[in-house]
Image (cartoon, rainbow, N blue to C red; front, top):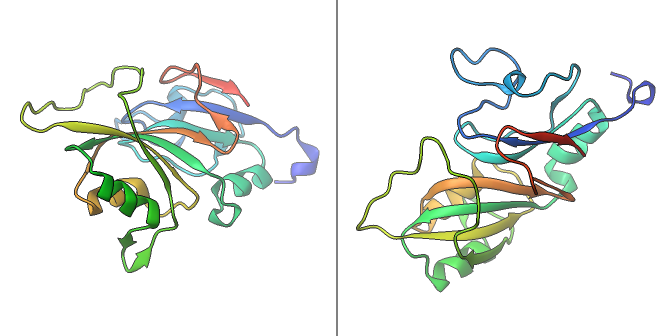
Length: 183
């Protein structure tokens, strides 16, 4: 695709839980074409089926590379509900980097937060009365496969819900799940 001949588009999409980050058939699972009817746009990076939130789409290979290439180090911020009360020690471990598959993650910005004002998830998180939860705001600058989930699990606080809130200057402010806008 020759980006010089087309007007670059950026679409900011709030991907719902259990939607595949692809346009092709999902064999009974929802996919991007169920929400976005603009031809010639493709995801810039991906967001797992069991994660929610910001997915950027574009018709520009240049923008697609800028967003998805880890070398560009665009900060990605997540709101993460984790199992158990998270300790100050575990937050410090996440901030300094944890070992995942023999590699230490780059330092992350991690802050414990109150439960954010967000949409209900369907199906909802299974509530267990005897196990508390915590909410974190985590910003990373790399993109290892399922990195945030693997990081929180490595310190004993597995992720129950993961919402990507922003990538660089783009965020899902004022978008409900399944909604999108031009960026």
